[in-house]
Image (tube, rainbow, N blue to C red):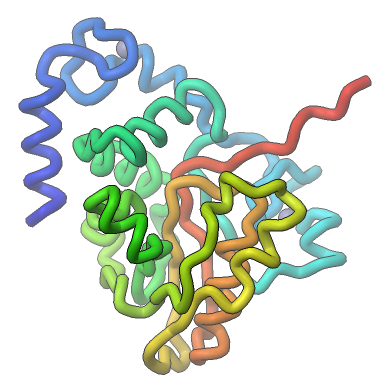
Length: 233
Ligand SMILES: [Zn+2]
Ligand SMILES: [Zn+2]
């Protein structure tokens, strides 16, 4: 119901003009801006969604296997995908949530999960922002995939500094032991949903937490994937 409400609000707020170029649009974006979004394509590692020859498991996932089993990402976290994600996250543009959820759902078709767990915000950040953007995106994805929305399966056990404020190398340590699954999820196939995946440290820690609670499989479903900088030649 809330997702439908979001769609309706989206139509009211953006009726007629594209969120990015302000040109004429039937939905949130005009056809051209939608077509130009940096969709992830090519051969990707099935586990971390970074480029990998012939879509094989990449070297990093082979040598340091993450706790999650797979990653589905709709977009590269580049302009203008970053504009949409940040407008939802920091500027309260909630009408973008169903749109981003829809982009993600289209990449998930055919895959199944028993439940969707949005990455939780810390209590302090939730108070400040008033909503969790991952939960807002997850509403539409749950509707589209039939997976149960289950935010209650992952809680923050302590406050941590925002990952984005830390150097990449410190992010795994920052989130270690930061999450808690309050009940057993024996045998469950769980999708953990977030807006952006950068190092994957948060998602790795949540996957470890869910597996300790009995999850059989944990996938990351993310709107946008940060790509490593291109090697300089
Ligand atoms: Zn446009
Ligand atoms: Zn990989």
